[in-house]
Length: 271
Image 1: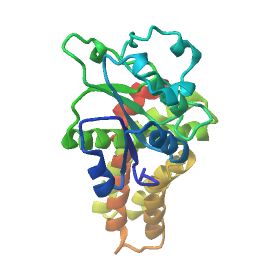
Image 2 (image 1 turned 135 degrees about the vertical axis):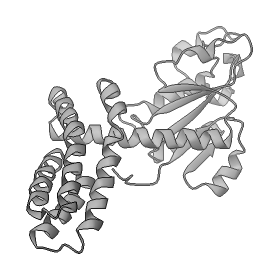
Image 3 (image 1 turned 180 degrees about the vertical axis):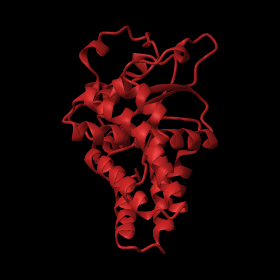
């Protein structure tokens, strides 16, 4: 499933990377350290991933007076020398609440906490429920690129889950059954099509392609359906000069889908 738009990442806080250089060199990354800037971005841009800096040993007393009206009442009642379990500023908790607002643009955006713990801190050992993951800093540019690549892959897998859930009207049991059948049948059908084409059994190749095409069309997998349609049309019209190119595209698109099998089957119940 090709990404519909560039994969956009918001980096908030001090993640030990030169933020200004990213804003200049990377159009896929927006970096901000000021509360007002971060709030503006999360309210006006739909991000694919948010990296959230969580410094340790912060206190409520360190919150600027101009931001206190953003804090929830329970935060104001905290001792002014006490920090939360992850040592976050109350205004950071408020930003997280804004991000996770069901009516907000980024309610489903994965949020990764970045911590730079002190030696006696236990913050890196558990991930709070409002975060999708927690990592220990510092985050180098290489590590950032690896993290983005990882979540790009996860985003594609989540797209497939949403496509099938939409097709089944959120029937989760049926959706899981469809995934299992697709992961089992599609690779075998691609192998059978390849064998038939190599043996110039074009009628057999067309029959198998037609069956595969029907399955992916029913499930809404348009990225596989497109080359399957084209290959079936070529076989139907005896356009054998183009079949190899379209088969290779079908083979690759199928692989692009089945490579997410492990993640989808292991994490389906979470979404």
